[in-house]
Image (cartoon, rainbow, N blue to C red; front, top):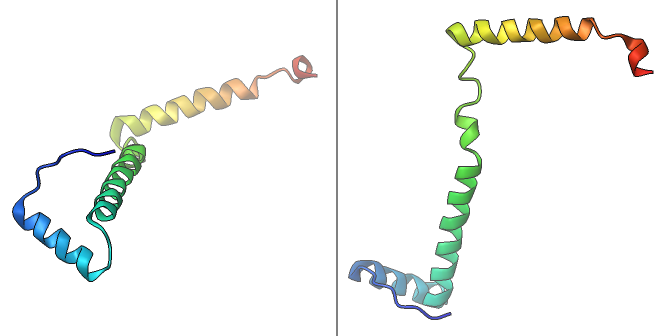
Length: 85
């Protein structure tokens, strides 16, 4: 697909030099660069949850997590096994 883009003169010059040195076309370089950028952005957004992992283990949140864990343990200890047979 063809389109027109506006590049800074120094960026275009550097890209052309790079392509000449590596026997590549400007089209291939642009496709590769855009794919890399898009994949990195996609990967980063998929991993945003990791920045929050473990952050709720301090102060009141830690107490609340312990309280909830106790409720769950109590509920599971009162399961009537005959109901599951």
